[in-house]
Amino acid sequence: MSELWRLTAHEAHEGLRRREFTSVELTESVLERVARVEPTINAYITLTAELALEQAREADAKLAAGTATPLTGIPVGVKDLIVTKGVRTTAGSKMLENFIPPYDSHVYENLRRAGAVMIGKCNMDEFAMGSSTEHSAFGPTRNPWNPELVPGGSSGGSAAAVAAGECLVALGSDTGGSIRQPAALCGQVGLDPTYGRVSRYGIIAFGSSLDQVGPIGRDVEDVATMLDCIGGHDPRDSTTNPEPMPDLRHYLGRDIRGIRIGVPKEYFISGMEPGVAARIEEALALFESLGAVVDREVSLPSTEHALAVYYLIAPSEASANLARYDGVKYGFSDRSAPTMWENMEQTRAKGFGNEVKRRIMLGTYALSAGYYDAYYLKAQKVRTIISREFAEAFQKFDVLVTPTSPTVAFRLGAKVDDPFAMYLNDIYTLPASVAGLPAISVPCGFSDGLPVGMQIIGNFFDEGRILQVAHAYEQASGYRNLLAPVD
Image (tube, rainbow, N blue to C red):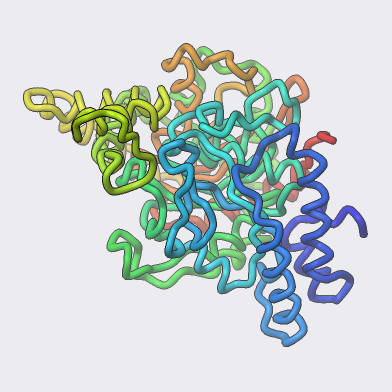
């Protein structure tokens, strides 16, 4: 009973429903776990222990009244890009170090309505720009499987918190792989929904045509439950799908005989670690043994351009979104200089980290007069071609299967001075993000003692199908509820 933090969210829900323990006891167990491992992992920027216990007491009242949902009383972590009323929200940046939002984001409203318990705000790369959670103004997060390694990024704090038992499930955000890649490197399940499935109201913007909020959990059922809670139409975000949300848990437990799985050959390139390739081949063999039809001769020829497309579109949108941080309207302000323009320069020079400055410069250049057509407009045209290739593939296949990351977790600092090497770490997750497709990463074994992730990509708004395939694989492989050996 003292190690309730080891439970998945749906296991904890069953225990709460049967009155085997209370939400307060579950929350206290998680907070004790946080106190023990957080000095090593640094998964949180802000802990909200008092608020969590208050919410746990409210959850126990709901459970007693019989009005509980599957997330009532469940301890969750929330990426610090997601606005939470009255709780500091920094986006991992000195620029917003003291920002206390006056309102809640749509996704947090839904979590509160469901009765979830917020343990704290999770660490992240500054403004979600990074692949290792080393670009945070509040120090790097460490991988719970080996604290000398990165957890992935930019939702590295959320993934590490789940893997270390510092919460049962967490919310992350994904612009080019920021949920799936850290989930893979930390041995967790991470789901990036279709663009428009989840409202972005109250999400601090990075790349507005790419940003998505999604869940990270210890098994497929937990992420399905979280997406059921946060998804759906929101009139405050005109890009959300007005169609009703399907019951995603309805897809769990279905067999996958006859499911057509495509394996794009462009995702098996030089640079991928042999251990990663071996685990993916083993997973494909398992799919075949379950009755799925696997075709390894699929081609998506524009995949190689996705990296360039992403690093033109995302920085361009970031340069526009981050222009608001000028020291006048929002956040940090340096007013030591004699003129307004100098104050603005000093505010942005001191408030932003190097990776954010690099992307603002890239984006501003790509959008500048004389270069817009050559870079940004051309990138949008190639984006359309990439989307068409996926659309053609989904006429033949139900899902596509690829590695999530070409490598397992790498050492802290190994790629900080080589931005291109860092960007390549997201090369398998970027194409689905560019196309706006849903994709999930599930654990598929280990290489050199570290978790390997497998990505399953689905057609637009077909999260149910990828959850069906992921759940069937998870049940057959046994790779679920992987808790890292940190203490």
